[in-house]
Image (tube, rainbow, N blue to C red; front, side, top):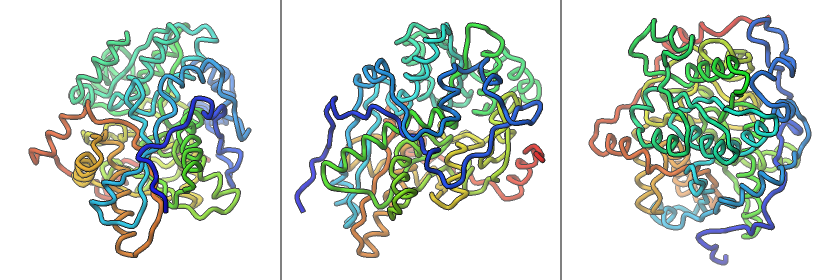
Length: 454
């Protein structure tokens, strides 16, 4: 077999011009989101106070392909296509017959895949005359991306950053402020949702559910402001499929196709972005591929959560959506993979998991960082803690190939670099990093917050 280059690129002329919408091909359609007050199916006009019309249309669309606006395509060209890389040195270190590829999204200005949706979200809001965007962020990748995209379109940006990440990752805060964003640790005293949490627990470390509540309240309270979300919702997942669509074209260039596709999974955009264009082939053509969503054992939404209707935020301001959830009151521990600390998951990812079309695996952070350093010491790139979850399972699958004598093709999404996460690596290297796993009793208590829907 001919030797594949270390990096496989596309030209600008080969870039995808449409996003892929998996709703067109799912065997079981999603259950409708419900209004948080009436608990009746939500109407498009119910979402108009926080989202522009184009994103609402994309949220419910069942068209297979949706055109990427020309202005968005041009801005994508600042950093796309991202490279598809062959991990030769990791393969050699593992002594595996598996062929390991990774799609590297750390080449974006924000250092992660999040800019793929931040740009179109800012674009559509600008078209409707919105002046400011409010959002939440965990580890800071999403907040950084939206700060950059907002500046591209002349919009103001307010970011409610989960307090534990605000404390752990000060340089992410500085990056957002460098692009003109206002960054507020959440829970904060500036919203009713934040004040309620602080009254109950003045030392709250925060959660994505709490930060979402604050950002949504901000948007609803200001006519010139809309809300932007970095994961979970269908339109966000749609925009991220640019990753997998590029990867398919790049693999075609080298006559390869993945047997196993892996992505870390918090809200779902990372995993969905790399896997959904390939899952189309599984659903429509019967391709024998496995797609594995990897989550932290400290926040095991798919592997230990319940498939049920639940609120997307702590204050119960967002629509009630059908998803795998740990309960909207769940506050995970202060693990370093801040982008994976969400109590729920994408309805699309959840439905596919419920239908048995994808797999899920939970891993502990010590083994994640061990895998991250092995990758860095062979391939030269220091991964973000979130992406390192995918690396851990890619290594596990490559070792299984070695033990079984199988030459599988493994593809994973390296969705961001770890250069703002050196504090986490310091904790691991100094042996102060702790693994956390919840007992079934604690999880059952958290699940009691799930609303009863007839």
